[in-house]
Length: 236
Image (tube, rainbow, N blue to C red; front, side, top):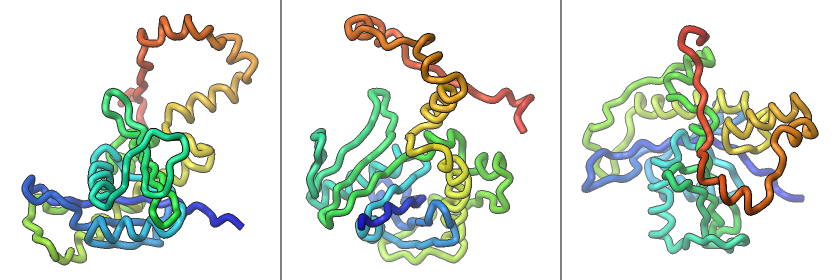
């Protein structure tokens, strides 16, 4: 029987000293039960935990946290690849030309696979705004980000509570979206799927037919998509 892929939400706290930039605290919880929370003080320990089984791990702003993961992977002998079938010890990335990070997929030496995803693409707002928008009982806190934290530093209870709240807020909101998401990476993909479901595939293809390859190639560079936002006068 294939082991179930576990879904997690994580957050790194890092030092702000450019001469000693590293993870000094991480929080990790299950997507469907944020009370199942664990904490650690190094990226080595974090990767050791998530590599034990197949997993999907969300970070709120993977572009930031993913750099630390990629750096660690290279230091541990992993290789980046564009192969369709990566092997153990390799990882792939989905990063746009504009530098938007969507996914890192790591094939661990252990044989397990982890997909690191960006929850910011599903919940395009700050953690503080998520807590307020979803009327969650826990709100985002504050810590001294620039406080000197030398190697071996022991996080205070307040710092642990801070990262616990951060991952818990994202997990609670993301769990609501994931029920109907079916594994899609972005809120835009979710919206498109919902639109297709509302009007039907036949009507959708009538409005937006599949273009000839040459026609598509000629016009594709002319558009980049769009963006939407809530008028603050109408925002709940």
